[in-house]
Amino acid sequence: MPTTLQSHPTPAIRLYLFRLGSTSSIVYRSALITPIIPLIATYSLKIHVNATIQTNPSLDALNICTISEIIAKRRWSELKKVLKDADHIQILQQLFDSNGNPSLILVYFTWLEKDYGVSHSLGQYCRLLNLLANAKLYPKIKRLLNDFVAKKEGHSNSSIFHALSMVDDWFCSNSVLVDMLILAYVKSLKIDLAVKAFKLAGHYGVELSVNSCNPMLAALVDQGKIQVMENVHKVMIRRKVQPDVITFNIVISGLCKAGKLQKARDLMGAMKVWGISPTVVTYNTLINGYWKKGSVGRMYKADALLKEMLSKKICPNEITYNTLIDGFCKDENLPAAMKVFKDMEMQDLKADVVTYSSLISGLWNDQKIHEALDLRDEMLGCGLQPNIVTYNALINSYSKKGMLKEARELSDDAARQGLAPTTVTFGG
Image (cartoon, rainbow, N blue to C red):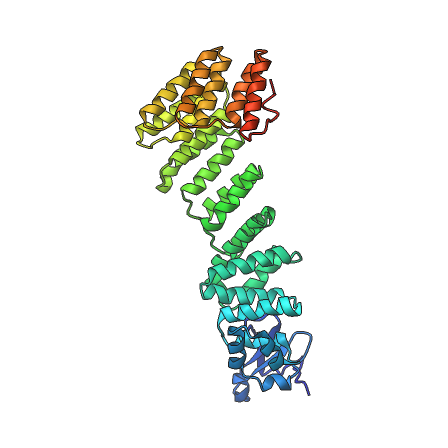
């Protein structure tokens, strides 16, 4: 007969609720208050929620070590014969309770899903994740969480955090698991859920790292959610999450994207407070921001950043110079663009097809047709093949001047090179 527990214990005994690491069961352990029933102090009675324990005779005869060995060798047909009508979930519970190899438990866990269509409970997922985290099996955690986030649509962040908090030794692994949960959300493009998990982590006292925060910030920038990105960054700093140079570069990029150039400039200045120095990526991001979002005098501010880089012994690269050259050309300031081009050569940096395309376009717009063609020949002489951007610059320039025959010839040449004309090509 199933064992049941009286709903009203005697006054001599206080019942304490102890977790055994499984959300599918509850253990009531009696603690002695008076010395009249000493045996009760060491007795544990385990009952299942909404059900009493049903002993499975076939399971009693099984050796968990034998089962583990079969699982390790992936002998699934043999395992099916051995288990027969056994309760597979109960065997999973035994594997959990036996402190078995987490990798083997994961194999069995996954097999139950694929071969038997078992839908594991949230508690079982969390217990397995905790075992894997304690064993530092991070790649396995990543795969399991990615799969969980993709399939388990019905679980809210609140239920996930609650289930994790009910697992034994949760505080030993919580940072790793929540970091990787946020990463799984980001990978699945569920950015709103990632932000909610980030906020809940604070309520549960979970310390996060830049390993999850940086990808989340980058995803918010990509989606144009700049205000949310700023708020997350502020909370990171308040929670003392140690930022790195990538953190600052991402936030500066978002601020530039939103046109908050002065704020981005101030943030770069604040990096030294954290003992972090700006890199060429930091400066390139700001220079690009001034080029795209700046107002009057934007390119001179961008050029001032180049001078600041050089004064701080931060070496600019091709992207730095190409951005400045293109910006000056689009501002129809060809002399400034040519000066930057010469500076680029003095830094022993080779111009690429992007550099030449910007200058050719600038020369055409300044009515310097022969110089533009000479520069094209120089580009070809350097072994650089024109790309569609180069052709766009030349064809648009010909079109604007009514030189349609020449524009058509270049278009045909682009087609022979396997470069398809675009709307930009004939935009003139």
